[in-house]
Length: 222
Image 1 (cartoon, one colour):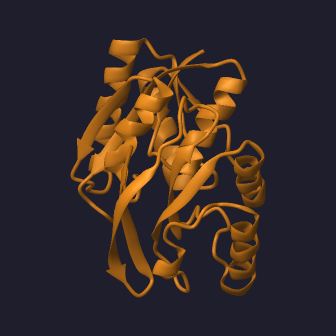
Image 2: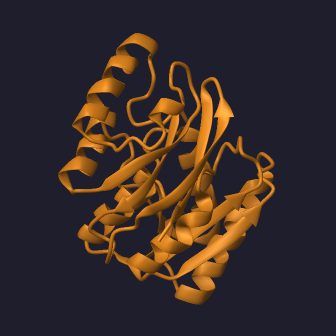
């Protein structure tokens, strides 16, 4: 099936695209929504401006939609971007990286139903440890670019998702109930390399912004 990927540049949307491709689907385009609202319910925002570099090393066309990020209004902007993908790339469905967020999954499914296309959710209801282990097993290089929950601090920015990371997050999960895969918005990630990439992206510089338990890292890559 010819699919568009709802793409944020983070681990979940990239892993979902990889799994869908492995299941025989064609990745026709990436669809990214850039939100002005840093607290968006729907869309990832840290280092979102670097999706162009990821699209380039994946050699997949990219559609970028913009939104003010107002709750529910942002869904209209998403729908318009998906309509553009249907027109330009003849997609038959979209891939999401939703793991457990009913808020996200239900709203995207509603848009797909309205437009008469499929909603493909390769990670839906997967065990959170399984999601992280899939990344490691398939040699994804993923760094943390945002933390938004106690007791996470700026010391977590730039950390690679590896076995030590999984162990540390497991400890926090047991003590503070933090979602292991960050599904509750506790942290955001950026993929520097994976099997979909023709070459690895390198972080050339970065700026950290925030305080206490709310930090974001804006990176420059090439």
